[in-house]
Length: 86
Image (tube, rainbow, N blue to C red; front, side, top):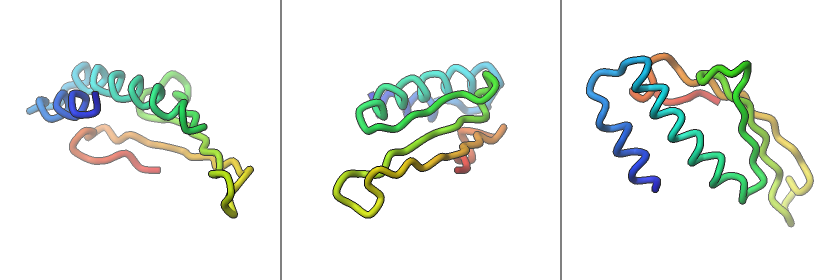
């Protein structure tokens, strides 16, 4: 599935808003399914696909055990040619 998601991103030769939104939907849905297993939460901010908030729970038996770490994720207008910023 990961390969299929990245292949769909690679197929974009010239990004359009619709193509980028469709690919972001695919990536976000896949990401949410996979990270649910790892105690990671990801949500849209204000129903905007360029802003996400996230939470990562510290792994057990480490100094981070029990900690909750909040993330602010920004997806640039030039995505997929430039990476998201955390």
